[in-house]
Amino acid sequence: MPEVRNHTFDELSIGQRAESSRTVTMEDVRLFAAASGDHNPLHLDPAYAASTRFGGCIAHGMFSGGLISAVLAMQMPGPGTIYLGQSLAFRLPVKIGDTLTVQLTVANKEPRRRQVTLDCLVLNQHGKKVVTGTAEVIAPAERETVTIAAAPG
Image (cartoon, rainbow, N blue to C red; front, side):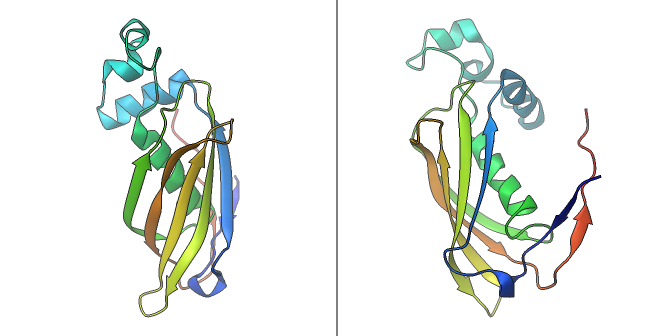
């Protein structure tokens, strides 16, 4: 099983970055709909979605938010991170088949609470911003390496 090591508050520095990419599939959208309960036909019904200004199915906006959460939880700061808040602006639709790259950058550190502000950017395969925003977290105090459990399914 794979292992992941976190980054403690003291190890993080302003400007430090983490990045991850993923290609969005219709199965991703279906699973997100099942987990969230959001069954908007814009996401799931190709005939309906074709009649909209998007011309086809698009991913839920919060799917991109979930990808940001995954980078926070698995890379930086990593396991042990406590999510305090998120501010997101959805700039462009995410279409099935788009490859999204999440980029997180440490923007500010507040030592009293080990609070970290990260700038969040999600780009599509054309380098266009699809999501921008910030995340507020409490970074772990101690370094740890954890074994990642297999995902269901």
